[in-house]
Structures are given as structure tokens and as C-alpha cells.
Amino acid sequence: MLVSCQEPKARQTLEPAGHVFTDARFNEVARNEPYHGDFRARRSAYLAGADHPGWEPREQVAARFDAGISHWHLRAATRPLVVATHGMAMTLWLADAINLADPPGFWDDIRLPDLFEVNLASRTADRVVSTLLFQSP
Image (cartoon, rainbow, N blue to C red; front, side, top):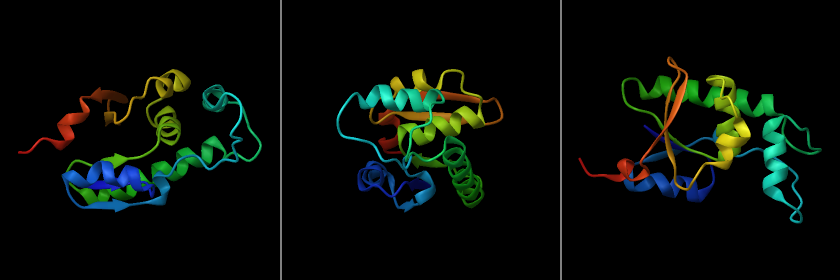
């Protein structure tokens, strides 16, 4: 089951593997972010707990993302669920869902296009070689 946020490049990342559903619950953090200054430091501070005016509350991001995961996990049934999303939103969800130890560090280490296998039962998120998603059976 392939699902992405509404950003075209996220959907296009998954399209070589099959039909992709889109869901706004996987969109990036809604924010009013200036174009000047150090955006990485600003985003890292947000992930560490800093409140920025005009930024979606972290708890709201994690809750909407979790609702999306729950919805699509049920629809996927026994099939693997693959979600193409954004780094900050995913990091906030992982911080909540698996008690991610260092959200800013995790986010800073994401490379495009990274693939993480998340196991909610064991509370782990392990990086997988991204090209595995697109190998032919």
C-alpha cells in the first residue's frame, strides 16, 4: 500500500512502485517560515521543543500523522504500508510513536530519498537502502 503526502515530488517518488494514494495528514509541518536566516537551525530548534509563531503545534502534527498511519494501516491489511512524507512531520510522529531519543539529530541525518522501516511493536525506526523499494520482484 503506497501513500504519500500531497506534495507532487513525494508522490512521484513512489509512483515507479505502483498506484499511490495521497493523504494531507502526511503533509509537512504547516508554518510561516521566513526565507532569510538559518532555516536548518530554526527547524532543529522546533523539533527540540521551541515554539515558533505561525508554526503548527508539534502535538497536532504528531496526532494527524498518527491518524493517517492508523487509517492506512487498516486499509493495507497484511500488505506493507509505505508512506512518502516530509522529515519534520515524520520525525515528530516518530518522537511520539516510538519515543525517538533525539528528534533534531534524527531529522538532521535524513537523506533523500531515505526509507525507514518502522516497527511500532519494538519501537524502532531503521534506515533501509532506498533502492530496495524500486527493485523488481
